[in-house]
Amino acid sequence: MVDNLMIDGQRGVVYSPSCSLCKNLLNVSIYKCKAFKDNEIPLIIWNGKNKHKKPFPNDNGIQFERVEKI
Image (cartoon, rainbow, N blue to C red; front, side, top):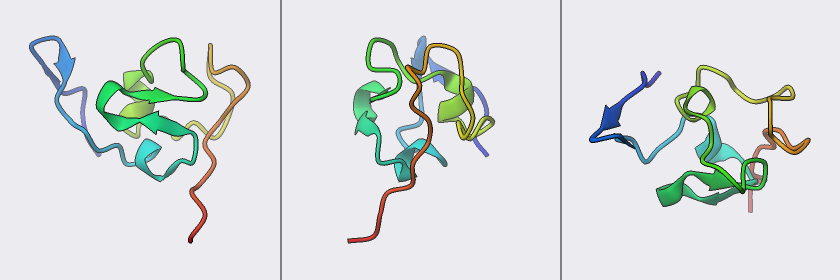
């Protein structure tokens, strides 16, 4: 699991153990998804410490949904 890695005030990890598998992820390079489209994905979710399978403040009622296999 990734800790709160920040480099010069920015997130230093472009892979998320949970968000990278979610169909609601919009843009990995700017940490955006449908749930948090007005803000960055919270770091506690991005780093996998919270799997976002239950409601989280300001998630617009959208939680983790696994990407379906093609």
